[in-house]
Image 1 (tube, rainbow, N blue to C red):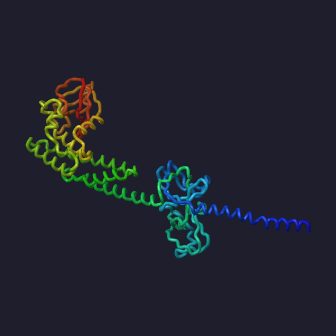
Image 2 (tube, rainbow, N blue to C red; image 1 turned 90 degrees about the horizontal axis):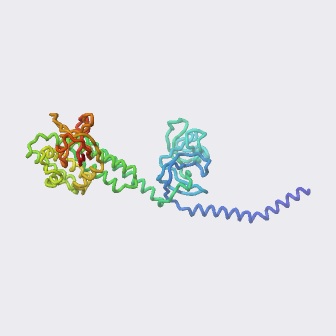
Image 3 (cartoon, rainbow, N blue to C red; image 1 turned 90 degrees about the vertical axis):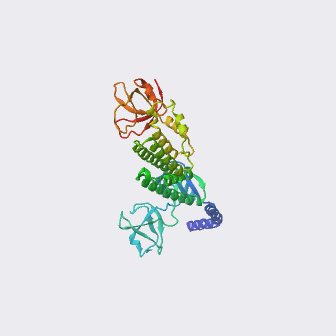
Length: 405
C-alpha cells in the first residue's frame, strides 16, 4: 500500500508540474514553427569545388553527389549547419513497382529511394492513392523510375553557400543558360557550314555576330565564352587560309588585273565588315616598307600582306595597320641563321629567301615587305619574324619584322 501511495503521489505531482512542462514544449515548438515560417528562400551559389549534397542534414549522411564552384541551388530551408535545397529537375527517384497499380499507390508510406534497390537511401514517401508517373528502370525492372516527390529536400553545408539573389534568380539564370546554349549551337552550325565552302562563297559574318554576342552578353557563363573564343579563332584561321590560297592562285595575273582583284576584295570586305577599317590606302602600304622597295621581290608580297591585314580586321573592328603589326611582333619568334636567296624554280614557294643553320641546312623560308633581305645575303643574322602559311613545304615560313647581325 505504501508503494502504491508513493506512486500515486509522484503521478499527482507530475500532473501538477505538467502545465509548465507543456508550456516549455509549446514555446519550443512555436519557436521552431516561427523559424520555419520566417525563413525566406533564396538562390545560393557554391563558393568551393567538390561541395557535397547529402540526403540528411548531418556529416554522416549519404552523399548524393558533389558539385563544383559557382553552381546555383534553390535554398528552401535550414537545419542546424545545413541548408535544405530542392532537388534538381533531372533528379531520379525509384519506387518498388509492386506498390503501384494503374499509376496509383496501393499502400501507405511507400518509400521512395535514391537508387533502385532496397539498400538505397530513402528520400521521401508516397501515400495511398498518390498519382505516380514513371517508367520501368533500365537498371532494375522491379523498380519504377519517377521524379523526386514534391517536398523532397537535400542538404548542403552552409559554409559553402553564398546568397546571390531571390528565388527568381535561379530561374532567370536557367533561361539565360538555355539562350547561350542555343546561340552557341547555332553559331557553331553556321561556322561549320561556312568553313566547308570555298572562299568566294564564304559569308562568316552571321557566325561572327553570334559569337560576339556571347562574348559581350554572357560573361557570366565562362565556359560558353571560352568556346566562342576558340570557335572564332578557328573560323578566322579557316577564312584567312582560304583567302590567302585564293589570292595566291591569282598570282599569275597581270599587275592591272591583280589590282582590280584587290580592289574588288577591299569593297567586299568593307561591305561585310562595315565597322572595320578595311579599305586600305595603298600609299600607307608603301610607307610600311622601310627601304623604298627598290627590291622588286618585296613588292610581290604586298598582296599577301594586305589580304592578311584585311582578314585580321574582320575580327578586330576599329584596328589599324600599326595594331596588326604590333600583334605580329607580340607573337613573333626569334630565329638565327644565315640568309640566302632561294634560286629554285619551285612554284608557289612561301618565301624568296631561306634561313640556313651552321650546317647549311635550310630551317625556314623568309620574306618581308619591311626589310630588304637582299642586303643580308650570306650574313649570319638574328631575325624577329612572324609565322606565315608555308603551303605544305618542308620547313616553316616567316615574315621578317626586323633583323640584326
